[in-house]
Length: 220
Image (tube, rainbow, N blue to C red; front, side, top):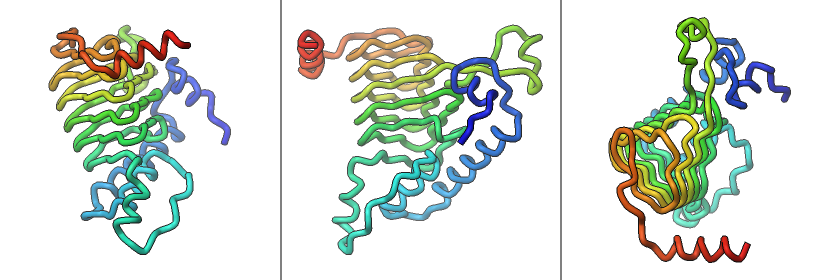
């Protein structure tokens, strides 16, 4: 599918216009998919995964059903767990690793790519804002002006506390923890705890995982 010049600018973090018919349709598609997840009543694990893929635009084939419910559930043990309600603009610009959990009331403004690494846990009411606006009010111009954005990357094995806000352009290193209610405005190094508004480093996390990572870097 050919991507319009306006959408290409959006994905690249350049000035673009969000109120075009193309992007309105894409947001409506995602909104409807999020609503289907919310409307599901005690869905099976298979159905949960199917509903998330509908939000994410993942068209990869589902594995064939197994007659034993426990065995069928086990087919999806590495797929992300996404709890409703969830609020996402496009869905197709979100990348989740294996064994990721997004708890309820997660908001993802995925103007640009928002990636969350494997085994990362996201508590309730966390927001990822990859979209932003020009500071010049004349250029910003309300709903008639352009918008822009920056990618957000969360590493593997992170824990994002409840109510945290991750701002555009932030990278959170592997194994780090973001305290509840924090506003993360700049990059977080691997294996550190940050908290506050704006979030500041509280301490380093001592773990054999960081040592293994350092040894791997030296070998490379």
